[in-house]
Structures are given as structure tokens and as C-alpha cells.
Amino acid sequence: MSGSSLLRFMPLAVALGALLATAGCIVPVNVTLDPQGHPAYSCGIPIDARVTRVIDGDTIAVKTGAGREETVRILGIDTPETEEHGNWGNEYEGISDPAYLTTWGHLAGNQTKDLLKGKTVTLMTDCMTGERDRYGRLLAYVGVDGSDLGSLLLGGGYARVYTEESFEKKPQYLMLQSGAQAAGAGLWSAAKTAESSQKSPVSIAFVQYDAPGDDRENLNGEYIVLASDEQVNLSGWTIADNSGTIYRFGNVVIHPGDRVTLHIGPGTPTGTTFYWNLSAPLLGNDADAVTLRSPDGKAVAVYRWGK
Image (cartoon, rainbow, N blue to C red; front, side):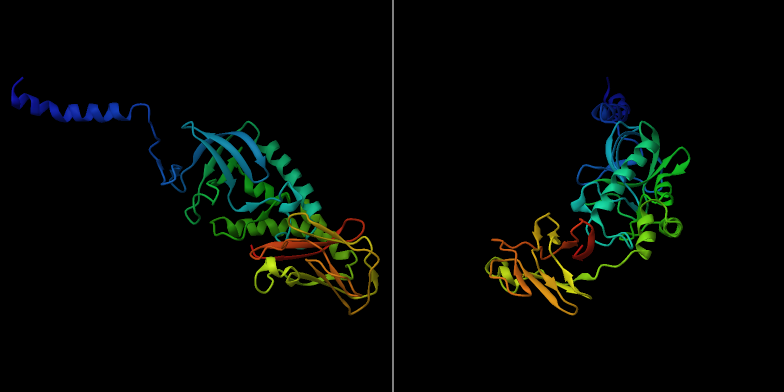
């Protein structure tokens, strides 16, 4: 072959070489890989996927049309956790009982299973939101049978709007949540009931969760303060932190206007000062929660700090 003929065939050879080099590594046109090796999808472009597992009310596992497996966190909503230690705090307006929220966490998971199990869904990311959360899960709206899953869960009272992030459907989702709250739908029925229930006279007035100096050297610098509007015998009442460590009160009477202080470390109790007698710090400095329960196990007060 002459030199000129060889030059004419070089572009074709280069193209064939590139084709062979990419054989067996086919990536859809709208998918690239991010620095962590995750597929990076084009926001606003639908992605067809088959549901392989429902993890909980707001998280599912899917396999996309390209054969990629993804864990998807449903964008814009939050359902209660399925373990009690995950349901501390005040994310659900007017509802602070972790046990109650845990029950609804399971109900939300069952509802999502009923709606999605074995189905093909449409995923869509949002240009206003990061594509993935800190766990690497894909953040996406989920379309099923012509409906938006987030809207169905919010309208049925199985979820709240995840207001901590910005996303395009937030105004629409907030309206759906307001409607569910007004109707007392799903988990919001507790908030309606709580409006007419008797408020506990005992409350958590203050928590000193960050002891001065080294927490390990100043255990009693961590403490919890209770207050009461009326005379109450605290026998059988308990306090627990987010890890589930429990302190149970004995025959202790708190009077109106009094403060009862519970220190984390060791000590000798007096009339209004008590000691958990732990040998290590308990309360998280960055984030944690403590819950006060009456003798029947009902959560009557939650004090939370951090995220």
C-alpha cells in the first residue's frame, strides 16, 4: 500500500480502534460518572427504572434501564424512621412521641411497598437540588402509574415535606401537607388529638449538654433540669437520651415552681438534685436529644439540640 493510501485509511482505523476500546463499557448518552464513580444524570430528564426493593417509606432500590443499581431517596419528603431512636425531635409539627412516629414509619414503608413493589417507575432529578445526598443516594422524584409518589404520601399523611432543602415542588408539597394536617390524615391525627389532650405539668426546662472544660473530667457539668406547674410524684418517670440510656426516678416529689436537676456523673442526691451515676459523658455536644416519659411510657417532653 502506498503512503498516500495509508493516510486515507488512518481516520477509519482510529475510529475502529476507539470503538473497540469502548466495547463492553456502554454508558447511556445522558449519563456520565462523577468523581466518586456514581452515574451523573441530567436533571429534569426522566429515567426509567424497575423497583427491586422498598427500604423504607422514603427510600427504594431500583435497577435502571442501563442495568445500573441505585438507591433512591425520594426527593422532597421525609417519612418517620422505623426505629424509635431515629424519631427524636420536632420535625413533625405537634408530634413528639418517638414510639408513635415509629409506628407510622412502618405504616409509611408498607404504603410505599403497596404502591411500588415490582413496578417500573420514572425517576427525575431536580436542577435546584444536589443530585445525591451525603450517603451517595440518588435524590429524585418518583413517578408511578402516572402519579407522583411524594404527592401520594404527603396527601395520605404518611410523610412531611423535607423543608431543609430547596426543590422545585416545595410549594406544591407544602400545600399537600397543610391539607393533610387540616384533615388529620395519617400520622397528623395525633396532632389533632393532642390539641384537646391534657398537657403534662412536668417539662424539661433546660439541658446543659456541653460541660465546661473536658466532659470526661467534669461529668456533672452535664445535667438536665425539670420543672413543674403542679405537685407531681416522679416515681416511675424516666429520662432517656438518643442512645436509649435510661434514668428512672424513685419516690421524688416536685412542687410547683421547683426545679429538679439530674447530673450525669456520680454524687449523693439531695431534695432536688439527683445523679445518674454514669462513668462517662452521655450527652452529645453537637447533636442529641433527651426524652421525658411518664410512668405509662408516654413521651411528654423532648428536648433536642443540633441537627
